[in-house]
Length: 154
Image 1 (cartoon, rainbow, N blue to C red):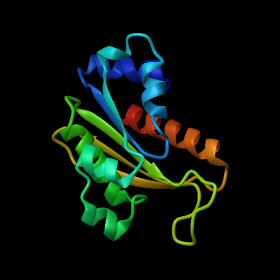
Image 2: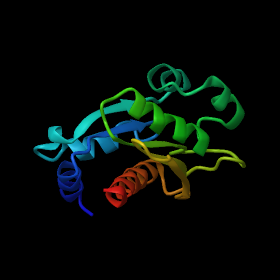
Image 3: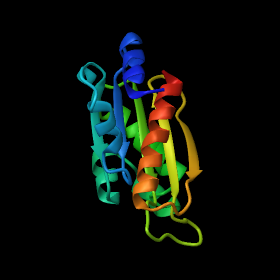
């Protein structure tokens, strides 16, 4: 689904969108706001690149970060839930991952965790292994996947 269709569906459903991004640095918010009229749908975006930003802006628990690390479905879930709680949106998508270069044996380059929170519903999470496709490749793939997730719910 293209972004204009996603925004139109959101508008028709009277749903506003928030984003909570880490490794994509606001790319999803940019993709949404590149479309004229997006202000009717896009409520706000949080770029929370550091753990402190995740805690301060989204209410991610330090205990969750300590137990699972920033690149985890648990943190992605708290990011999406926090984006809903700290906005007037009814739908929030979050992204946290390792764009690279680098990574570790346990959290390799290209691992990205996503969450989708819908007001009144259960937050869903997933992890995608994009692989070592380069920093820009991981970030672009993660952005596209987040838009696909939003498109599916709308």
